[in-house]
Image (tube, rainbow, N blue to C red; front, side, top):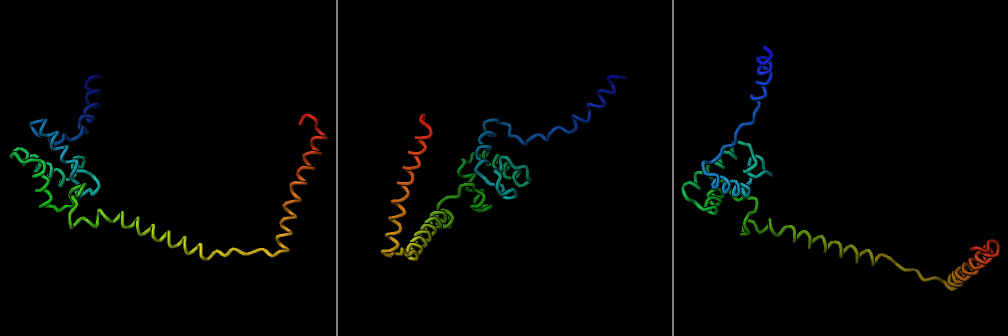
Length: 167
């Protein structure tokens, strides 16, 4: 009775086992397909590769890849088929051509424009700063104040040394 109760309690644990992934018969081909699937973006998940996605669309794309590999297609031919069906947005690393040139050049253009704006603002700011000239009276007062501080500092140091002979 005890063992029957333990089996009855452990039985639900086996029900929650994960669903097995769809695999090809050939492990080498499966590894090749998964490597190629890393380069393809899941259009349902957007930022996840087809190799990691659990969506129905990604499963269909993996099945298409397997079928094309069995038929003898190269990796580039399979990618070309996917681009033809779904567009260049299916690739994580789109090629540089006349359609994607704005995508590849945008960071450099924005950096150049931002640098130009920074230089313009700094030059404009420098032109706004006006250095005022001191009058003769202000210069004399500043010189007196500057000359006064070192002398008062020296007298303070001397008087402290007289009080503390170890200093």
